[in-house]
Image (cartoon, rainbow, N blue to C red; front, side):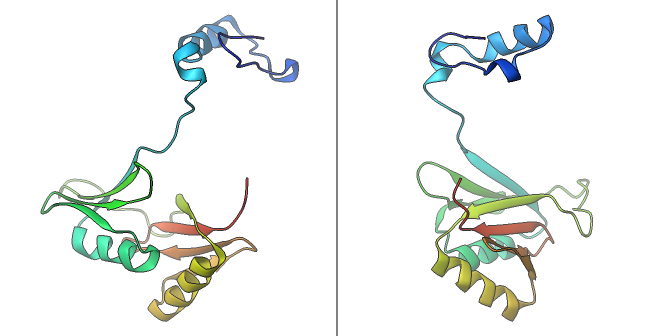
Amino acid sequence: MRFAGAFELPASRSLATAAARDLASRFLYEPFVSLPPAVHHVALRTGDIHSLAAFYAEMLGLPLIRDLAPRSLWLGLGGDAVLMIESRQAKEPTLPDGTMDLVAFRVDAARKAAVREAALARGCFDGETEHTVYVRDPDHRRVGVSTYEF
């Protein structure tokens, strides 16, 4: 199946229903074929923006690029992307204990090793694989740093 531009689905992955084809045709048209989605921002809600921002700044070396306290603090993710640490409203639920939701950041081997050591020292280490170290942020959100190449 071929859509506008150079996007083509392999025959084995063809869209089976008319509704699916219609939905795909609305999203896969010429202006977007040459510009794949990329991360613009990641927003994390918390009861303590300063503590959470300090964690990401210290563990990952993310610079503070905008201070909108008490509402939010923005950390640079490289390029045009930002990590927005935002104040959670009192009525918002907290994260469930042990959540396996994950945000993972690409790092080099040296940063991965540094994060592992810092996480062990802080008591927030949450496991590892060959390519990825997992930690828990102050809100118990699962965070990975990975050297895996796609």
